[in-house]
Length: 117
Image 1 (tube, rainbow, N blue to C red):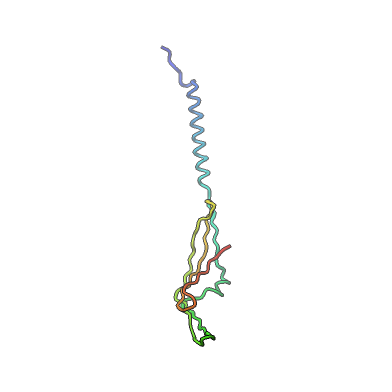
Image 2 (image 1 turned 90 degrees about the vertical axis):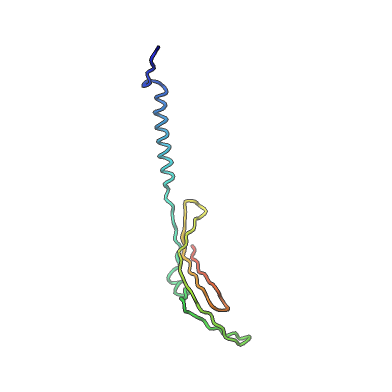
């Protein structure tokens, strides 16, 4: 019976290349999956906030000329949120600021200011 020397066999050479191939494939998969996602943040400028961001306790008194009545609207709550959203492109994400003001009165009930690009 003849003994087979596996050091010189064709199968042993292919297994070395196969192992090298799978290591390279794994590294490539790791590099591609570690892609950094970009995050954009749209903010509401301080200049705009000075004109439109009314704080809790602010109020307006209206006079209706048609029926000669007086009405008022009060800001009962005001809060700033930073919200996140995924874009249609899977590698991008964005954040945006939103100011929500709740009112008590006949004119407005809730008002939102949302930042955009």
